[in-house]
Amino acid sequence: MTDTLYPDEKLFELGRVNYDKLVLYCTRLEEKGFWTQAEQVMKQSGTEVLDLYVQSVLMNLAVHCGEILDSQREFMRVITVTNPLGIPREGRIKRSVYNDSKRLYELPPVLLQLCGLYDKEHKGDMTLYFLDAFLNILLCMAYLNHGKDVQINGFIQKYYEKISNFIIDQDVKRQKEYIKRKLMPDGLNCSINWTESKKNKEKVTEKQAQGKNRAKAASKPVKNIDSSNIQTEKSDTEKEKGTDKNKEVKQPAKRQGRKVKKQQDSTKQEIKNKQEIKNKQETKNKGNAGNIAAKTGTDSQAAAEEKKRLKEAFFKRIEEDARLAKEREEKLAKEKFLAVKKRLEERERAEQEEQEKQIKEILGELNSLVGLSDVKGEIQSLTNLIKIRKLREKMQMPVMDMSYHMVFTGNPGTGKTTVARIVGRIYKALGILSDGKMVETDRSGLVAGYVGQTAIKVHEIIEQAIGGVLFIDEAYSLVNPDVPNDFGSEAVDALVKLMEDHRDNLVIIVAGYTDEMKTFLKSNTGLISRFNKFINFPDYSRDELIDIMEVMADGAGLKIEEGAKELVLEQLGSMGQEEWEDFGNARGIRNMFEKIVTNQANRLVQIGTPTKEQLMTIVAQDVIG
Image (tube, rainbow, N blue to C red):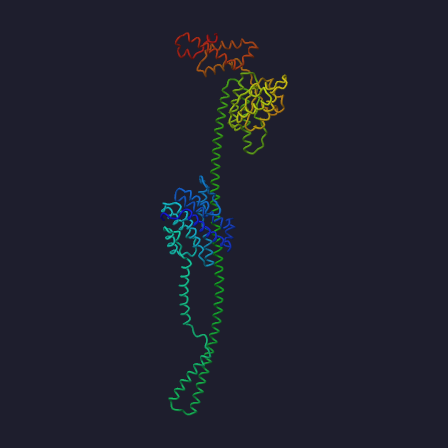
């Protein structure tokens, strides 16, 4: 097969013409009842199976030749009435399309088999015409891709070898010659006149039969003798005898009379004998006719039974092929399902392990904080509750409604903001939040000084926090019952509504003094129903504050001498109640640590060139200063 002079438009036209022929043959099979039983097995019409088969073989041809051209893709997509494989107009062809086409290509060619059964019953050549039209479609597809002669020839030859076993009453020699010519450059114009070859074959057979009949007729005895022939023979004899009489001497009348009588008797006897032969022959012919009729009836019945047997065997084979194909498909589907299930389980297990690792790391960070033992226990219990709730949801068990919003109560500097950040990260790891970030605000970020502006500010801050935690410090300041027409109430109303709108991807944590927060929650009934998780943050002890200072020093690359720690502890213990309330827990110890570091710097400057050890050490003098 070399480069073709056919333009693409002509190849598309020829492809459709040959496809229309295939549709015609399928329609004839359906009209003659050859598709009825196959349709019960395959649950599709003949043309639906045709479209699926045509696209599958074309797809295998395209894959066999290498890269699929745009013209070939379009040919496969539009050459049939339907597009059962779902070949896209453009873009990547799915892997499932290739797999389906390969699987369908390997199935027995049911339509070709039915054509063979039709030919056997109607003594036709539908199989050969079907094959010719189908190969023409393949050639049209092949001509769209120039320069791939070897691959195309090899595929068509292999395809013919694959389906040739399903052609009934095939003339192998004639078909091989046909395929050879089909693979030549003018393959589309090649079409052996099957009908003419068949007529020639029938003429030869008919002549042979006529010769045999003539030989048989010559060997048979005479069936009937006509009396007129006898009379004619008699007259001819008398004429001959009359001529002889003229030549002979006249005999006496008596002798002549006896001779005539003798001749008459002989003639009568001959007629009688011939009549007996005729009767016997007629009787024999009647017997032979009866035998022939009986034999013909027996042969017709045997032929009908043989035809019935062949049809049943054929459809049984189709059913068996369909059953095996279904079993293979179910097996492949099961294997694919198990493989997908295994991958999903492995991915789920990996995700769960990663989630556990993240939660463990976050909780480790929480536990590394100084003090807050009760807070840590509350957060750990909350984490465990959410884990079990997720498992119950996965197993489709009933679960109680749960609010993830929280109230942190306690004095300033007790670690509420730090823990709020950790809670956001835990919620993200557990799948409660999509982001886990924390947005921090207070009254100034939510309440405006003009009518209508507060709701806008609340919407803006909520939009920033979606996917994470909105932490509102000193939330009680939003409500001021002593100030009439305060816009803080408007902020609370908007907050309650937006909490409900974004309840699946937003957590709000409000914080403040214990008594003030109780008053704040009672100011709006919507707040009480949504904030039902309370965690109290107690003040740090003096020893815990020293531990916090050591953590700060370690983070700054410093170490505190024991004498310096004792001095800090003495200063903390000397504070009065009012000073202690203003100190601010961790916030106050941070301020104290920063002053100590400043004192160290002032001391080291006077040394001139301090050593590394001196730069790293905080001494009692730094605290006294």
